[in-house]
Length: 343
Image 1 (tube, one colour):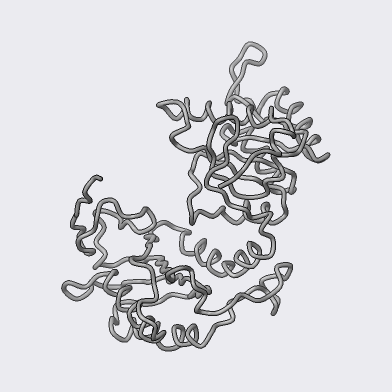
Image 2: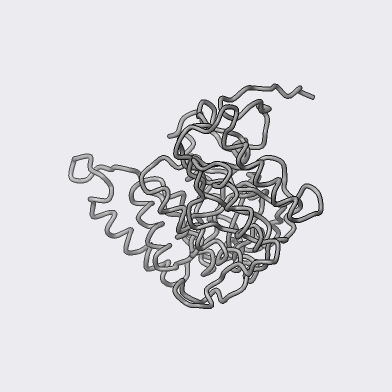
């Protein structure tokens, strides 16, 4: 077994190089200085100690019955007693709204406005908070080791994550009330290729699956032009969207401009779609809002081939391989699709 190697990260401390991806720090970033962070901490065993989710998944965000966390006594203590301690002990640190307390995990946006005291850093703040909550719980160490942080440094990130956190109870309730539409699998084997998957698996069994595949450019009237500017595209676009409107499942990685347009129209119109993406689907991976809502509607399955099963040493080769996988999925007959197992 390979021995783990320790590495010192400024403002963080010593960390093993082989830590889980969800808990690696951003190497080279000073976590004791000014910054804004989305921090996630998870209860051991996903024990729902902070409350329950209640509401109606058909309600609008402005409705009183929109899904929300009904806090337990411990959840109330976290919100009203433990969180305010962070700013009281570290005045240079703020907890920005919204605070997202879920039954088995907590999301916080922590803003550090000035340099922390010597030997103090983001991990110190998070560790103290976790310790305080564990003491309030009274049952020993409550949380998993470590935490996940995301540095918010780009324009629009705070707005996007704020919307994400506000809708987190809604996503939770949907996944629990509609598990067949939000199913996750880390290994689906299709034609010898392993995929991670998320969404409505029944789309694989539909008898009519149509590949969406366009090159970025093509020859028309003796000139090379972008495909989306051609009459060929206009005809193909009309035929594909007509097929989707009738219930055919379109399959594409959505790489070229024309493929992206078809993918986006399917998501908008809630037409059945199998989207093959390059990004892996791990234990905590979730689709963004638009694709999540398509999963809720039962019109989307996301497939991500394992990196080990992808061919090609360049982006072009890998993208070409994704289109080859789309063709293989379209060639699946119903009998074969019925035998696909997940794990």
